[in-house]
Length: 240
Image (cartoon, rainbow, N blue to C red; front, top):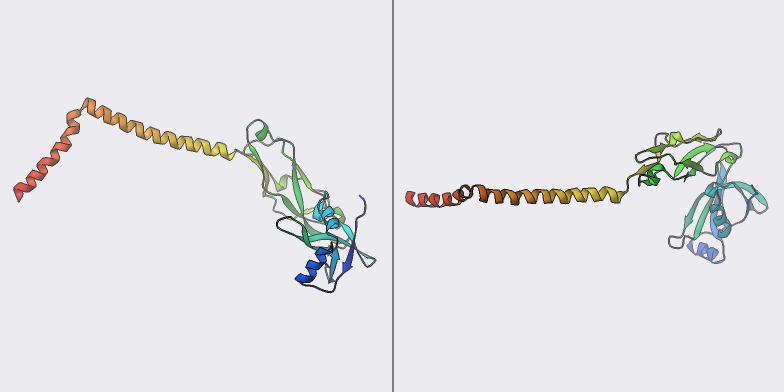
């Protein structure tokens, strides 16, 4: 892999107005820091940082930040984007020691078409999109690729099922589900609605049938309760 070098300039001023002018001139503010190291405000090109973010390893890319001729081996620890156009506004660079481990989050990608999707009409749901690991800077994997070809509806792959490189320690809990195949929501809602409609129709029809049978088979029996109410009123009048 080709070595990546990003030029940086130190900056002494800070504040919203200063940062705005900096962005207008094609630079963005940033900070360089590390364990037991002084925090240094810097300015860098957003185009160079964007190119790193779009690379295969993304924010876990190991590169050199050239500050005044001195190179610092860093990774992007954090960055801020403008909400609407997603332009870079700020970047934090963490200086690493190549002989010391660090904790990072690595993206998860899937490969293959699940059986549950291909033949059963299911939907693939990627639940956990990142795994947190610990390793030396040079051993950070670009990504974790998970083969989902054998997944059927109701089946899943957990963190413990993912094979890790030998020098990588897993920090994410091993029993967490990474990906599974589920039944489509539309297909789940439709039967419920159909059952509810059928239930309403099933209740309405017997009531009509029962009333029809009562009139046909025992019309007098249905009429008696209505006539029975009138004598009760008469009885009350006699008591008065």
